Image (cartoon, rainbow over all chains, first blue to last red; front, side, top):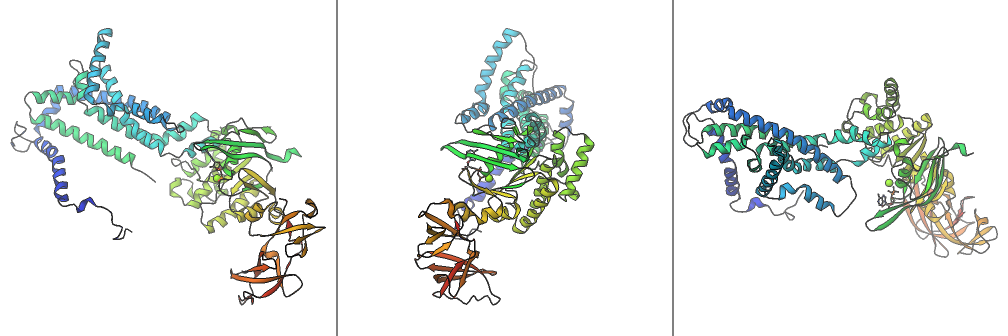
Length: 270
Length: 355
Ligand SMILES: Nc1ncnc2c1ncn2[C@@H]1O[C@H](COP(=O)(O)OP(=O)(O)O)[C@@H](O)[C@H]1O
Ligand SMILES: [Mg+2]
């Protein structure tokens, strides 16, 4: 449709664009490609190639510390994403079904606090805050990690749910009421089913965010509460072997699967 | 007499708070809609038609006034307690439910037994000829089919009153004509009171038992289509319902005197006092053009419309008048601009507007 005269600025016409584009992709993906390739290293170095082998996957699989950390990670991520998604759903319902009010931007800011505040600040704050609770109550279980993860996962779960709610036609709820459905029935039969893809997407994003977290976990965890990422960090500080590459690759594959599902769920449908 | 009234709107007023101040969407509207009637709210966009429907449905509560259904005040009842269903302009079909599930929704919510729900749903599917599509999702249907499902969904619970908010406006002309018949048929078959909203005067005239013409949150006139068309109360109604010629005149005995000095017979003279300045409304198709015997006029322009030819005329005092004549077989009316003609009006065609 656009005629030559109305041609708009195109970044692709800048000299060197192709080079920049390729360089960007190399910087983005070369390290990851290297990581994946070296997970199949037959040798013991993360830098020198010793032939193709899947032995590090077997080593990681049989490593009881890895097993424990994985289970702990999955446990924390499952529980935290469930809690975060529930709270985020309620927050989204509370903040979208409202009239115009200037204060909403401030409320959004509050809900999205974990995205804005530097993670290290939150981590230090939580460390100090939880330390005093630990002293007061004597409780040192996984509760702290779950509470912390739930909190920073809320905005990630909130955003897709809110987007879905805002895209929902309010007339549908009016129509349900017109057809004799009471407000809660309308919510259960109409709103919730239509919101499900958003909730599922939010839960997946929250799960991935929890699974990948290092900084806050490192600060909050008690002794013997390593998650997979903090365990790997610990390993790297000592002698790194391609076992770390193998675990990373497995984590990468899982994340890619979850994020693909996330995009499929949030894709606009007509 | 009162027991044949279905919906009784008494001095209903609705004021919305908007960012730019308050909006009076309805300004003390009173109207009585009879049982089993096809009643149409007609008016330009923004005149308050949807607001009146929303008040009757219960989506909105009136700022003042009350709404009675079968003699009882329902103003305070929520929508889910009113035996009133709505066909939404956007259809508002539940996208995650099949056609059948959409239609049975209302019956289920009413707590009807399973076999009754299934039976009634089948019946209504049959009624709107959508049985073959029962297991499809709304997105898999054409606009016309979605329209039928929306109708079926609202009819299934057998409401006392069906509210239809411009249900045909999204359809193309051919489909719209088809659905007009369909709606009329459904209304006659079910005997349900229909309150139909449209801004299309032809639709209002062809489908309704009675029409209320609205403007700026008020009802200007209520009557059957013939009344509204032949005896509009004011200039707005006359103009909104089809084309009209307006002429200034003064009351002169039982007749009216035009600015040209001629006197003509008119109906509605009684409502005004002798010598009062009034406006006359004359439909173009009631204007006759002859060689002599009437008012002297000059042809200004002829416009060919196929079946009709519009003749733009200028009277002696310079006022303008349009005559709609049936086109002759040749298409040539045989009058060119500048031709002198004589104009008269069909008996009863000259209407003195009330205000
Ligand atoms: N929710 C609302 N808030 C503010 N103003 C409204 C609202 N709904 C309708 N209005 C105003 O009330 C008037 C009547 O609207 P409506 O009943 O929708 O008219 P119609 O259906 O005849 O086009 C319009 O001026 C419209 O802008
Ligand atoms: Mg409207």
